[in-house]
View 1 (cartoon, one colour):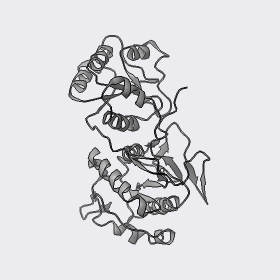
View 2 (cartoon, one colour; view 1 turned 120 degrees about the horizontal axis):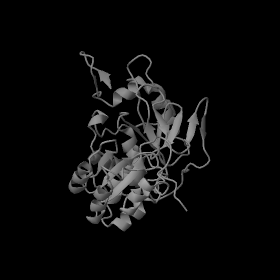
View 3 (cartoon, one colour; view 1 turned 90 degrees about the vertical axis):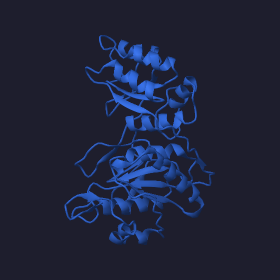
View 4 (cartoon, helix red, strand yellow; view 1 turned 45 degrees about the horizontal axis):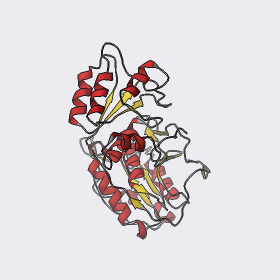
Length: 317
């Protein structure tokens, strides 16, 4: 971002400006610029994920790694989308951004960009987010602060690595290897997300299920939903009867859906709800878009949603 004379922050017009402001990056790697989009990430739409994935895939043989600069507002959605669409990676795809624009005093953008190139020439081979001192799996990164420089955390999973005086990776990272990458560019963006809150009318869920091909329902705690008074159970039942998946995740930052624990959770399961387990809402939404783009029957959707493709969940044995 750059600041206008009026004080507004808008996207800079030239990607080369980023490297002009951080010339040290060229000491780390030989860098080519591949401009794809120039938008505020708040305006991102799912169709851009397809463009990003296809562009990276088409250039896979030409480069040893990729660094994608991205606004922080929707960065977690994009990192999850690329994690699902780019399978069997043999080299890194690193995504980064900043809390403070590069041109401004105190910007974290310089460090994040330099560290992203350092990670991009390392032995990691997966989609990862580099932000602050953390290296996070693309399906686990979540923005948790609009103030702190460490704006992202790794949700429900240890970070892939830490950046301090040196870069230290965890032993379970996916390492570089000669693999044949796969482009799994399936996407049905007609998916809605709805948080459960006291007083939520079932008609809202009914409307979304009629106008969308799937719904992510952010439940309380372990995935609990109201079952008395303004019960959502009939709406879930109606949706699943019409072959519209309703996936229930938790509103909590830490934890997993354990819907069999409470009666209010079991009722949703009996109505056909699919547990998101320990996926973040952002990842659950993107994954349902991806799964719905390649499957239409509920049993297959249920099975795919509860299978780990990019480290997005811990499977229950």
